[in-house]
Length: 325
Ligand code: AMP
Ligand code: MG
Image 1 (cartoon, rainbow, N blue to C red):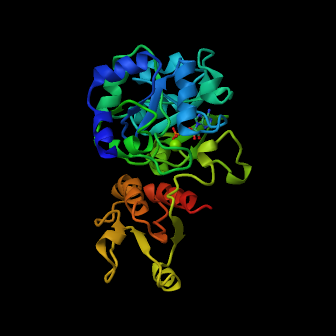
Image 2: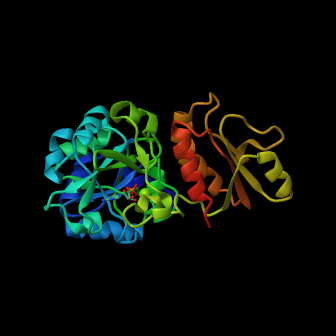
């Protein structure tokens, strides 16, 4: 029964999506990072619906999605040169810039900060929708607060079957993790959230960058909330799978692994993220694998720590937050 409802919700009907967005409704929208819960960035009604549906605390601001770099001045002012360089290099793409906001951007979007988070998504469906609208979209990840982010339309439909009418079908998200977020202070580029764009790629364009000090964590960087992206199942992250297997012997265990499967372990109980040892591929499979393991009523999920470079940094960040109680 619920399956039928889900299938009806998921559709490729762009005109329906446009109609809903123009009338202050919220829809599931595919992007290359994860699916978003999208609404008119200038509509108080739509913004409030998003916070309510996600059960998102009001101190956690939203990302504004624009259709092209040419629109950057409609949402931001006093844009630093390095922001222009990064936007030109990576938009459309999984990089969010924190910029001084235009007065037209509501404090409801930015949690009353004077900065706005903005990016151009790199997904044909999202770009098509934005192109047909004369307003930008706010689109936080389409998961209830703290839960695993959605990378397939079915994930969104099952989270929000009672709250939204439509999830636009754009297939599986190609990046599969959220955008990297950077801000600017006195000519320095500061990373606020690790994401689908590697730090190495950013440094190639703007030189050395800093990472926000986690101990100074404040509502300024709520993407850094410690517990986040969590399965319901107990979850641990380790460098030594074997010793954890011995410790949890007798329990119903699921494994999340980089490239090698475990012999003598049932295939459906282990998710290998990239047989070819590609960190990009592993990142794109991460949330789907967590959804799969979380469905199986396991006692515990044991995840392997990934190499600390490229998107391995992003994957470890998400696994650490998933393991927080
Ligand atoms: P989500 O779209 O669910 O990935 O969440 C968007 C994230 O963007 C939030 O969790 C914040 O960390 C971040 N964000 C949005 N606006 C700002 C801002 N003005 N300053 C700092 N972080 C922001
Ligand atoms: Mg999110």
